[in-house]
Image 1 (cartoon, rainbow over the protein chains, first blue to last red):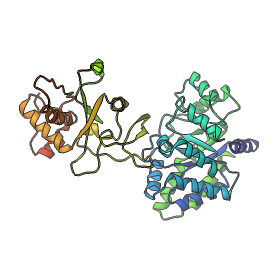
Image 2: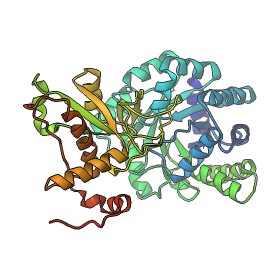
Image 3: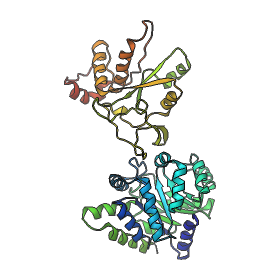
Image 4: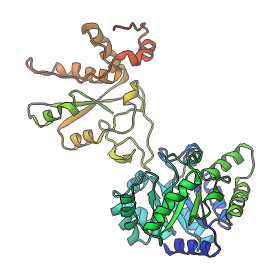
Length: 266
Length: 168
Protein backbone atom coordinates (compact mmCIF):
# COMPACT_ATOMS: atom_id res chain seq x y z
CA UNK A 1 0.00 0.00 0.00
CA UNK A 2 2.83 2.40 0.77
CA UNK A 3 3.69 2.23 -2.91
CA UNK A 4 0.78 4.56 -3.53
CA UNK A 5 2.88 7.32 -1.97
CA UNK A 6 5.77 6.56 -4.31
CA UNK A 7 3.42 6.45 -7.27
CA UNK A 8 2.03 9.87 -6.39
CA UNK A 9 5.56 11.33 -6.36
CA UNK A 10 6.41 9.64 -9.63
CA UNK A 11 3.30 11.02 -11.26
CA UNK A 12 4.12 14.55 -10.10
CA UNK A 13 7.72 14.22 -11.29
CA UNK A 14 6.53 13.12 -14.70
CA UNK A 15 4.47 16.29 -14.91
CA UNK A 16 7.56 18.24 -13.83
CA UNK A 17 6.08 19.69 -10.66
CA UNK A 18 6.26 19.05 -6.91
CA UNK A 19 3.60 16.85 -5.36
CA UNK A 20 0.92 18.85 -3.55
CA UNK A 21 0.20 17.58 -0.07
CA UNK A 22 -2.75 18.93 1.87
CA UNK A 23 -3.39 18.78 5.57
CA UNK A 24 -6.86 18.85 7.03
CA UNK A 25 -7.99 17.93 10.51
CA UNK A 26 -10.29 14.91 10.66
CA UNK A 27 -13.73 15.91 11.87
CA UNK A 28 -13.33 19.61 11.06
CA UNK A 29 -15.85 21.11 10.98
CA UNK A 30 -17.91 17.92 11.19
CA UNK A 31 -17.28 14.26 10.43
CA UNK A 32 -19.39 14.46 7.30
CA UNK A 33 -17.88 17.70 6.06
CA UNK A 34 -14.27 16.63 6.54
CA UNK A 35 -15.00 13.68 4.26
CA UNK A 36 -16.61 16.03 1.72
CA UNK A 37 -13.51 18.24 1.83
CA UNK A 38 -11.22 15.26 1.27
CA UNK A 39 -13.29 14.12 -1.67
CA UNK A 40 -13.32 17.52 -3.33
CA UNK A 41 -9.61 18.30 -2.89
CA UNK A 42 -8.48 14.84 -3.95
CA UNK A 43 -8.96 15.91 -7.56
CA UNK A 44 -6.07 18.35 -7.32
CA UNK A 45 -3.97 17.26 -4.38
CA UNK A 46 -1.53 14.36 -4.75
CA UNK A 47 -1.32 13.13 -1.18
CA UNK A 48 -3.83 13.82 1.57
CA UNK A 49 -2.69 14.29 5.13
CA UNK A 50 -5.38 13.81 7.71
CA UNK A 51 -4.76 15.19 11.18
CA UNK A 52 -5.76 13.26 14.27
CA UNK A 53 -7.05 16.02 16.53
CA UNK A 54 -5.27 16.24 19.88
CA UNK A 55 -5.95 18.85 22.51
CA UNK A 56 -2.27 19.39 23.30
CA UNK A 57 -0.85 19.84 19.81
CA UNK A 58 2.67 20.98 20.65
CA UNK A 59 3.78 21.41 17.05
CA UNK A 60 0.72 23.22 15.76
CA UNK A 61 0.05 26.91 15.49
CA UNK A 62 -3.23 28.67 16.13
CA UNK A 63 -4.90 27.81 12.81
CA UNK A 64 -4.58 24.05 13.18
CA UNK A 65 -5.29 24.30 16.91
CA UNK A 66 -8.60 25.99 16.17
CA UNK A 67 -9.46 23.22 13.73
CA UNK A 68 -8.46 20.49 16.18
CA UNK A 69 -10.48 22.00 19.04
CA UNK A 70 -13.49 22.32 16.74
CA UNK A 71 -13.18 18.65 15.78
CA UNK A 72 -12.81 17.49 19.38
CA UNK A 73 -15.79 19.59 20.39
CA UNK A 74 -17.79 17.76 17.74
CA UNK A 75 -16.88 14.54 19.50
CA UNK A 76 -14.45 12.96 17.05
CA UNK A 77 -12.80 9.72 18.17
CA UNK A 78 -10.01 7.73 16.53
CA UNK A 79 -12.51 5.14 15.30
CA UNK A 80 -14.44 7.89 13.49
CA UNK A 81 -11.23 8.90 11.71
CA UNK A 82 -10.73 5.37 10.44
CA UNK A 83 -14.32 5.39 9.24
CA UNK A 84 -13.66 8.62 7.31
CA UNK A 85 -10.57 7.05 5.70
CA UNK A 86 -12.48 3.90 4.81
CA UNK A 87 -15.30 5.87 3.22
CA UNK A 88 -12.83 8.01 1.28
CA UNK A 89 -10.96 4.96 0.02
CA UNK A 90 -14.23 3.60 -1.32
CA UNK A 91 -14.57 6.83 -3.27
CA UNK A 92 -10.95 6.96 -4.46
CA UNK A 93 -8.79 3.89 -3.98
CA UNK A 94 -5.54 5.21 -5.39
CA UNK A 95 -5.15 8.49 -3.53
CA UNK A 96 -2.68 8.00 -0.68
CA UNK A 97 -3.73 9.07 2.80
CA UNK A 98 -1.31 9.90 5.60
CA UNK A 99 -2.45 10.18 9.19
CA UNK A 100 -0.67 12.83 11.21
CA UNK A 101 -0.98 12.89 14.95
CA UNK A 102 0.58 12.77 18.37
CA UNK A 103 1.95 9.66 19.97
CA UNK A 104 -0.19 9.70 23.12
CA UNK A 105 -3.31 9.05 21.06
CA UNK A 106 -1.69 5.98 19.47
CA UNK A 107 -0.23 4.85 22.79
CA UNK A 108 -3.60 4.96 24.55
CA UNK A 109 -5.35 3.29 21.63
CA UNK A 110 -2.70 0.55 21.61
CA UNK A 111 0.00 0.53 18.90
CA UNK A 112 -0.93 -2.84 17.47
CA UNK A 113 -4.65 -2.14 17.36
CA UNK A 114 -3.96 1.25 15.79
CA UNK A 115 -1.75 -0.16 13.04
CA UNK A 116 -4.23 -2.94 12.38
CA UNK A 117 -7.00 -0.39 11.96
CA UNK A 118 -4.74 1.72 9.73
CA UNK A 119 -4.19 -1.24 7.47
CA UNK A 120 -7.81 -2.32 7.24
CA UNK A 121 -9.08 1.19 6.60
CA UNK A 122 -6.44 1.96 4.00
CA UNK A 123 -4.03 4.42 5.62
CA UNK A 124 -0.77 4.60 3.63
CA UNK A 125 1.50 6.57 5.88
CA UNK A 126 1.95 7.92 9.39
CA UNK A 127 3.53 11.06 10.77
CA UNK A 128 3.91 11.05 14.53
CA UNK A 129 5.06 14.51 15.40
CA UNK A 130 6.29 13.91 18.93
CA UNK A 131 8.02 10.59 18.38
CA UNK A 132 11.47 11.55 17.11
CA UNK A 133 14.32 9.37 15.95
CA UNK A 134 15.75 7.19 17.58
CA UNK A 135 12.78 6.73 19.91
CA UNK A 136 10.61 5.87 16.92
CA UNK A 137 12.84 3.04 15.63
CA UNK A 138 10.68 0.25 17.09
CA UNK A 139 7.41 1.81 16.04
CA UNK A 140 8.71 2.54 12.53
CA UNK A 141 9.68 -1.11 12.15
CA UNK A 142 6.21 -2.16 13.25
CA UNK A 143 4.72 0.21 10.66
CA UNK A 144 6.82 -1.40 7.98
CA UNK A 145 5.53 -4.86 8.89
CA UNK A 146 2.03 -3.49 8.31
CA UNK A 147 3.27 -1.95 5.03
CA UNK A 148 2.58 1.54 6.32
CA UNK A 149 5.13 4.22 5.54
CA UNK A 150 6.49 5.90 8.68
CA UNK A 151 7.56 9.40 7.78
CA UNK A 152 10.62 10.76 9.54
CA UNK A 153 10.92 14.47 10.28
CA UNK A 154 14.00 16.60 9.69
CA UNK A 155 14.48 20.19 10.78
CA UNK A 156 16.91 23.06 10.19
CA UNK A 157 18.78 22.12 13.38
CA UNK A 158 19.24 18.43 12.50
CA UNK A 159 22.98 17.82 12.15
CA UNK A 160 24.36 16.15 9.04
CA UNK A 161 25.34 13.06 11.04
CA UNK A 162 21.86 12.76 12.51
CA UNK A 163 20.31 13.41 9.10
CA UNK A 164 22.27 10.50 7.69
CA UNK A 165 21.15 8.20 10.50
CA UNK A 166 17.53 9.24 10.19
CA UNK A 167 17.52 8.75 6.44
CA UNK A 168 19.03 5.30 6.89
CA UNK A 169 16.08 4.30 9.06
CA UNK A 170 13.46 6.08 6.97
CA UNK A 171 10.93 4.61 4.59
CA UNK A 172 9.75 6.07 1.26
CA UNK A 173 9.19 9.61 2.36
CA UNK A 174 10.86 12.32 4.43
CA UNK A 175 9.41 15.52 5.80
CA UNK A 176 11.58 18.61 6.07
CA UNK A 177 10.36 21.25 8.52
CA UNK A 178 11.18 24.57 6.87
CA UNK A 179 11.80 26.65 9.98
CA UNK A 180 11.95 26.68 13.76
CA UNK A 181 8.33 27.41 14.50
CA UNK A 182 4.98 25.82 14.98
CA UNK A 183 2.81 25.21 11.92
CA UNK A 184 1.26 28.24 10.29
CA UNK A 185 3.96 30.68 11.32
CA UNK A 186 5.20 33.30 8.92
CA UNK A 187 8.01 31.93 6.79
CA UNK A 188 10.98 33.58 8.48
CA UNK A 189 13.65 31.87 6.44
CA UNK A 190 14.41 32.63 2.82
CA UNK A 191 13.40 29.99 0.33
CA UNK A 192 17.04 29.92 -0.78
CA UNK A 193 18.08 28.76 2.68
CA UNK A 194 15.29 26.17 2.79
CA UNK A 195 16.30 24.75 -0.58
CA UNK A 196 19.96 24.71 0.52
CA UNK A 197 19.08 22.51 3.52
CA UNK A 198 16.74 20.47 1.38
CA UNK A 199 19.53 19.74 -1.07
CA UNK A 200 21.78 18.52 1.75
CA UNK A 201 19.12 15.94 2.56
CA UNK A 202 18.70 15.00 -1.09
CA UNK A 203 22.44 14.54 -1.46
CA UNK A 204 22.49 11.93 1.31
CA UNK A 205 19.95 9.82 -0.50
CA UNK A 206 18.46 11.18 -3.74
CA UNK A 207 16.03 8.28 -3.97
CA UNK A 208 14.00 9.29 -0.92
CA UNK A 209 11.13 11.63 -1.57
CA UNK A 210 11.41 14.69 0.61
CA UNK A 211 8.59 17.15 1.17
CA UNK A 212 8.77 20.60 2.71
CA UNK A 213 6.19 21.79 5.19
CA UNK A 214 5.44 24.55 7.74
CA UNK A 215 4.69 28.13 6.75
CA UNK A 216 3.72 27.42 3.15
CA UNK A 217 0.97 29.59 1.72
CA UNK A 218 -0.18 30.80 -1.67
CA UNK A 219 2.54 33.44 -1.52
CA UNK A 220 5.47 31.17 -0.72
CA UNK A 221 4.63 27.94 -2.53
CA UNK A 222 6.10 28.99 -5.87
CA UNK A 223 9.59 29.53 -4.49
CA UNK A 224 9.78 25.92 -3.29
CA UNK A 225 8.75 24.49 -6.62
CA UNK A 226 11.86 22.38 -7.12
CA UNK A 227 11.19 20.17 -4.08
CA UNK A 228 9.69 16.70 -4.34
CA UNK A 229 6.60 17.90 -2.57
CA UNK A 230 5.11 20.76 -0.59
CA UNK A 231 2.68 20.56 2.30
CA UNK A 232 -0.05 23.13 2.86
CA UNK A 233 -1.89 22.84 6.16
CA UNK A 234 -2.57 25.97 8.16
CA UNK A 235 -3.68 27.91 5.09
CA UNK A 236 -6.44 25.33 4.59
CA UNK A 237 -7.48 25.28 8.24
CA UNK A 238 -7.57 29.08 8.17
CA UNK A 239 -9.84 28.99 5.14
CA UNK A 240 -12.23 26.58 6.91
CA UNK A 241 -12.45 28.90 9.93
CA UNK A 242 -12.98 31.89 7.63
CA UNK A 243 -15.71 30.13 5.66
CA UNK A 244 -17.54 29.17 8.84
CA UNK A 245 -17.31 32.72 10.18
CA UNK A 246 -18.72 34.16 6.96
CA UNK A 247 -21.39 31.47 6.71
CA UNK A 248 -19.98 30.13 3.46
CA UNK A 249 -19.49 26.56 2.36
CA UNK A 250 -15.98 25.44 3.37
CA UNK A 251 -15.94 22.63 0.79
CA UNK A 252 -16.15 24.91 -2.26
CA UNK A 253 -13.81 27.50 -0.73
CA UNK A 254 -11.14 24.93 0.04
CA UNK A 255 -11.46 23.49 -3.42
CA UNK A 256 -10.83 26.94 -4.91
CA UNK A 257 -7.80 27.41 -2.66
CA UNK A 258 -6.29 24.08 -3.73
CA UNK A 259 -6.83 24.87 -7.42
CA UNK A 260 -5.04 28.19 -6.91
CA UNK A 261 -2.17 26.49 -5.09
CA UNK A 262 -1.81 23.93 -7.81
CA UNK A 263 -1.74 26.60 -10.52
CA UNK A 264 1.28 28.15 -8.82
CA UNK A 265 3.40 25.01 -8.88
CA UNK A 266 2.56 23.67 -12.32
CA UNK B 1 3.38 18.42 39.73
CA UNK B 2 4.90 17.74 43.10
CA UNK B 3 6.53 19.62 45.86
CA UNK B 4 8.68 17.10 47.58
CA UNK B 5 9.08 17.08 51.31
CA UNK B 6 12.76 16.51 50.75
CA UNK B 7 14.94 18.10 48.13
CA UNK B 8 15.84 16.10 45.07
CA UNK B 9 18.58 17.14 42.71
CA UNK B 10 21.24 18.45 45.06
CA UNK B 11 20.61 15.81 47.71
CA UNK B 12 20.01 12.94 45.33
CA UNK B 13 22.38 10.72 47.34
CA UNK B 14 19.91 10.79 50.19
CA UNK B 15 17.49 8.65 48.18
CA UNK B 16 19.67 5.60 48.76
CA UNK B 17 19.72 6.19 52.54
CA UNK B 18 17.31 3.71 54.04
CA UNK B 19 16.53 5.81 57.10
CA UNK B 20 14.88 8.49 54.99
CA UNK B 21 11.25 8.31 54.06
CA UNK B 22 9.97 10.38 51.16
CA UNK B 23 6.61 12.00 50.83
CA UNK B 24 5.68 13.80 47.64
CA UNK B 25 2.87 16.31 47.76
CA UNK B 26 0.86 17.09 44.67
CA UNK B 27 -1.60 19.90 44.04
CA UNK B 28 -5.11 18.62 44.73
CA UNK B 29 -6.84 21.68 43.31
CA UNK B 30 -9.80 23.44 44.94
CA UNK B 31 -11.63 21.40 47.58
CA UNK B 32 -14.90 21.16 45.67
CA UNK B 33 -13.49 20.80 42.17
CA UNK B 34 -12.94 17.63 40.18
CA UNK B 35 -9.97 19.21 38.48
CA UNK B 36 -6.58 18.68 40.06
CA UNK B 37 -2.88 18.52 39.23
CA UNK B 38 -2.11 15.28 41.05
CA UNK B 39 -1.64 12.44 38.54
CA UNK B 40 0.26 10.24 40.99
CA UNK B 41 -2.21 10.56 43.85
CA UNK B 42 -5.36 10.09 41.82
CA UNK B 43 -4.14 7.17 39.72
CA UNK B 44 -3.71 8.68 36.27
CA UNK B 45 -2.37 6.46 33.52
CA UNK B 46 1.03 6.73 31.86
CA UNK B 47 0.95 8.88 28.75
CA UNK B 48 3.28 10.84 26.53
CA UNK B 49 3.21 14.58 26.96
CA UNK B 50 5.75 17.24 25.99
CA UNK B 51 8.31 14.63 25.00
CA UNK B 52 8.27 12.49 28.12
CA UNK B 53 6.51 9.32 29.21
CA UNK B 54 4.91 10.19 32.51
CA UNK B 55 1.77 9.76 34.58
CA UNK B 56 -0.57 12.35 33.14
CA UNK B 57 -4.17 13.47 33.62
CA UNK B 58 -6.00 12.35 30.50
CA UNK B 59 -9.23 10.84 29.28
CA UNK B 60 -9.64 7.41 27.68
CA UNK B 61 -8.84 8.74 24.19
CA UNK B 62 -5.53 10.21 25.29
CA UNK B 63 -6.69 13.81 25.26
CA UNK B 64 -4.95 15.72 28.05
CA UNK B 65 -7.27 16.96 30.77
CA UNK B 66 -7.35 20.46 32.15
CA UNK B 67 -5.90 21.05 35.58
CA UNK B 68 -6.66 23.46 38.36
CA UNK B 69 -4.49 24.63 41.22
CA UNK B 70 -3.93 27.79 43.20
CA UNK B 71 -0.20 27.59 42.51
CA UNK B 72 0.89 28.32 38.98
CA UNK B 73 4.00 26.17 39.27
CA UNK B 74 2.03 23.01 40.04
CA UNK B 75 -0.78 23.59 37.57
CA UNK B 76 0.38 20.96 35.10
CA UNK B 77 -1.26 17.68 34.03
CA UNK B 78 1.96 15.65 34.07
CA UNK B 79 4.72 14.89 36.54
CA UNK B 80 8.47 14.55 36.34
CA UNK B 81 9.61 11.08 35.24
CA UNK B 82 11.82 10.96 38.35
CA UNK B 83 8.71 11.04 40.52
CA UNK B 84 7.03 8.42 38.35
CA UNK B 85 10.04 6.21 38.95
CA UNK B 86 10.02 6.82 42.71
CA UNK B 87 6.34 5.97 42.82
CA UNK B 88 6.71 2.81 40.73
CA UNK B 89 9.60 1.59 42.88
CA UNK B 90 7.66 2.59 46.01
CA UNK B 91 10.65 4.62 47.22
CA UNK B 92 8.39 7.59 47.84
CA UNK B 93 4.72 7.85 48.62
CA UNK B 94 2.53 10.50 47.11
CA UNK B 95 -0.39 12.44 48.46
CA UNK B 96 -2.18 15.66 47.56
CA UNK B 97 -3.04 18.87 49.38
CA UNK B 98 -5.96 21.03 48.31
CA UNK B 99 -5.77 24.76 47.62
CA UNK B 100 -7.39 25.49 50.96
CA UNK B 101 -4.98 23.26 52.87
CA UNK B 102 -2.05 24.97 51.21
CA UNK B 103 -3.40 28.39 52.17
CA UNK B 104 -3.89 27.32 55.78
CA UNK B 105 -0.34 25.99 55.89
CA UNK B 106 0.92 29.27 54.46
CA UNK B 107 -0.86 31.18 57.23
CA UNK B 108 0.52 28.90 59.91
CA UNK B 109 4.10 28.98 58.66
CA UNK B 110 4.17 32.76 58.21
CA UNK B 111 2.74 33.18 61.71
CA UNK B 112 5.33 31.07 63.54
CA UNK B 113 8.42 31.21 61.33
CA UNK B 114 10.39 34.01 59.76
CA UNK B 115 9.54 32.47 56.46
CA UNK B 116 7.11 33.06 53.65
CA UNK B 117 6.92 30.02 51.43
CA UNK B 118 5.41 30.45 48.00
CA UNK B 119 2.22 28.53 47.29
CA UNK B 120 4.00 25.51 45.81
CA UNK B 121 5.91 24.47 48.97
CA UNK B 122 2.89 25.50 51.05
CA UNK B 123 1.33 22.27 49.79
CA UNK B 124 4.31 20.38 51.20
CA UNK B 125 4.12 22.29 54.52
CA UNK B 126 0.47 21.36 54.90
CA UNK B 127 1.26 17.64 54.66
CA UNK B 128 4.41 18.00 56.79
CA UNK B 129 2.37 19.61 59.60
CA UNK B 130 -0.28 16.91 59.34
CA UNK B 131 2.17 14.01 59.21
CA UNK B 132 4.50 15.35 61.91
CA UNK B 133 1.94 14.46 64.57
CA UNK B 134 2.43 10.78 63.77
CA UNK B 135 6.20 10.84 64.04
CA UNK B 136 8.32 10.20 67.13
CA UNK B 137 9.89 13.24 68.77
CA UNK B 138 13.39 12.57 67.46
CA UNK B 139 12.28 12.42 63.83
CA UNK B 140 13.65 15.18 61.66
CA UNK B 141 11.25 16.52 59.04
CA UNK B 142 12.78 18.42 56.15
CA UNK B 143 10.59 20.42 53.82
CA UNK B 144 11.84 21.64 50.48
CA UNK B 145 10.69 25.23 50.62
CA UNK B 146 11.46 26.76 47.29
CA UNK B 147 10.70 30.31 46.37
CA UNK B 148 9.26 33.33 48.10
CA UNK B 149 5.57 34.18 48.34
CA UNK B 150 6.17 37.56 46.71
CA UNK B 151 5.33 36.09 43.32
CA UNK B 152 1.96 34.93 44.69
CA UNK B 153 1.20 38.37 46.16
CA UNK B 154 -2.00 38.97 44.19
CA UNK B 155 -3.45 35.51 44.79
CA UNK B 156 -2.71 35.69 48.51
CA UNK B 157 -4.25 39.15 48.89
CA UNK B 158 -7.36 38.00 47.08
CA UNK B 159 -7.79 34.73 48.92
CA UNK B 160 -6.77 35.79 52.43
CA UNK B 161 -8.02 39.37 52.31
CA UNK B 162 -4.84 40.66 53.95
CA UNK B 163 -2.52 43.19 52.39
CA UNK B 164 0.81 41.68 51.51
CA UNK B 165 3.72 43.59 53.03
CA UNK B 166 7.11 43.16 51.48
CA UNK B 167 9.48 41.82 54.11
CA UNK B 168 12.92 42.24 52.61
